[in-house]
Image (cartoon, rainbow, N blue to C red; front, side):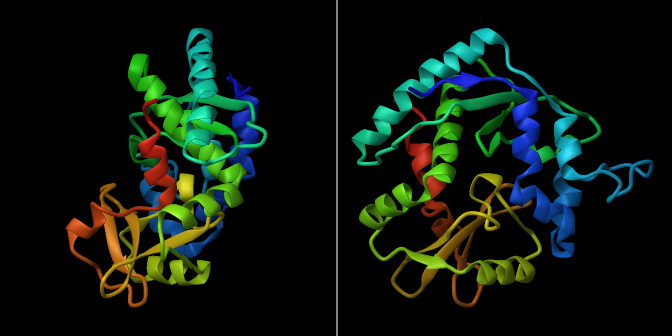
Length: 246
């Protein structure tokens, strides 16, 4: 049975071990992303003074107990809903939830979006139906991270012709298009990237600095029309969005 907790220690452990944050901190090519999403923006705290892990940790707080109970009930329904799609999760984990604090000095932290690392959801404060929707969405991302083979088998069934894009090729696309930003829920540092077949090419989709989806020709990196970007995305995001409501 899936249930939820709220632990700052677990959030620290998950972020400290996260390959995505490690890339932002160590890869020179990731500096534009880090400056956008994690580096302190003022002259008193120049880029490089703090790690993304510490910056993130300073902006989290516990989720109230009543919402943790709501999250537990929400997640208990998620696994049967996945089973209904033919996605069989063998041993659902305990999932951790923390809220991200608002910060005037760093309003662009992960572009204002909720996200996951390890088994922790980093959520913008919400309540009611919106809270349940986000918990379901982010819960799917945690399960995708823990059971990649289960989801790969599902993607092969529902997206005929889907192909894996090698990590070094995705890195080359990011170097080719500096406006692209990585997504912690399906980061190319630790998640398989896919290309969808179309009439003339294979299509990969990423986010840019406005959180718009950008479609690229998987072979050449050439930008494709916006209408294509609205139809495709990483399968992780497609499935998570589909399961936002019971």
